[in-house]
Structures are given as C-alpha cells and as structure tokens.
Length: 317
Image 1: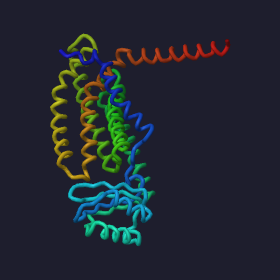
Image 2: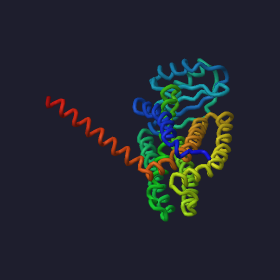
Image 3: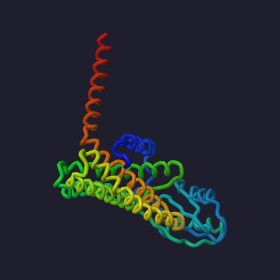
C-alpha cells in the first residue's frame, strides 16, 4: 500500500514550493484589480478593419485617459479598461470620432462603468463573503464530526487546506497581473468561492472515510488508519476532479474571452483543491495528532530563546 502519510513532510514542502512565489508576488505587487473593485469603464469595440492597440491607447491618452489597458481579442475586438467614461459625454464623442478617422467604422459591443464608491463596496462585500464562508465551513465541519475526539481539529485542517488553495489561486493571478496585466473582478471572487467549496467538499470526503475507519478500528495506529483512508479515496478524488478539469480545460480553450480567466481560476483551483485534500488536509491532521506540530512549535520557541540569549550575551560583552 502507498505510504502517503509517511511522506507528509515531502507534500508540505511541495506545497511551500508552489505557494512561496505567489506569496512574494502578492507582497510586492498585489493583485491588479479590475473596474469592479477600483471603479472605471470597461469598453468593448469591434472594428471592421485591423487595429493597433498602441494607437488606440495613444488616442485615449491624448483625450485625458492615459491610465488605460487595451487588449485585442478575436476578430478585431478591442477590450479597453480605463477611468470612468460617462455615457454621452463630449470626451466619449471625441474618442469615437478619432477611432473612426484612424481605423474606420466600429460597433460598440458593450460599455460598463462602475463608480469608485461602488467598486469599494463590491470589494468589501467580497472579502466579507470569503470570511463568512470560512467561518461557516469551520462550524459545520466541527458539528458534522462532533463524535470524534477532536471535532474542531477537523474543521481547522479543512480551513488550512482551503487557505492553501485560495492562496495558490491568488498568487497565480498576482503573477499573471504582474507579467500579463490580468485583472481580478467580481467573477474572480465567484471562482474563488467555488474553489473554496470544492476544496472543503473533497476534504470532507477524506475525513468522513477516516471517521468510518476509526470507528471500525481497521489499523492499530492513527497514522495507518489515515493512510488507509486516503488511499481508499485517492482514485475517487482523482477521477472526480479529472472530469471537472477536462470540462474546464475545454471551456478555457474554446470558450469566450469574457469568461476565460474565470474558467482559468476554477481550473487551477480544482487542481490545487484535489492536491490539498489528499496531501495536505489529512496530513495536517496526522501531524497534529502525532505531535509533529507541538514539536515544531517547541523547537521554534527554544531556537528563538537561544538566539535572544546569545544576543544578550554579545551585548553584555
């Protein structure tokens, strides 16, 4: 039988390897927030002829909208993100006139404007939704596993696995915003909440099998019971996730531009959620029960105290 629990430190190191670049990017660069959060205008135009995005950006700058992002989608569709552009304003008329002179006729596919105050309200509600979902998940799992020795621990482990997935998705989009100007919007929050739900669902499946096998005492030690439970659910978790991943991959490759990054967030989140439910959630449970966490905290405190004492001795000399 596979010894997944015995290699838990390896799985933790792999998680750190994937999370650290994203955390560094989040600390330095943060996330490129779309108009849903910052306010502004999202303007989609379809031109009859070819379009140069640099020239479009220059026209916007000449008319007082220097802070803009211009991207070219399929079939000469230009996606413009800029400061708020009021509908029917002289500025909008002037920009449209220059577009026609430079590139010919075009069709306005959509224009959406969000004020700064509305953007801040959406951002605050998004943060509140994530926090509320986390608290609800913790309480639900603690209640569902109330017959175990430490029901709250199961909830904490699921939350830690969930945070692993959320941080991974946030980190990837921070890096994408840094290198490819990818912005996060309200759809991204929807994807993040979906990833959180998927992650917890997978973790609960593993935990439920652990609870059943603990009651049946299928192995002499807790580590062996958890390992047996994880191996039992391994194929089921991978098969379930693979069907979702294949569907999302098809949507990402052949779907529309407007949902492209939403689907991508779901795609990487599902992969991360599958990994964390198998290789993190249950392993954290074993690490806590076997005393690994306590030993690590004790070692850290002893090391910190030793460093502080060495510093005091050096100052005294």
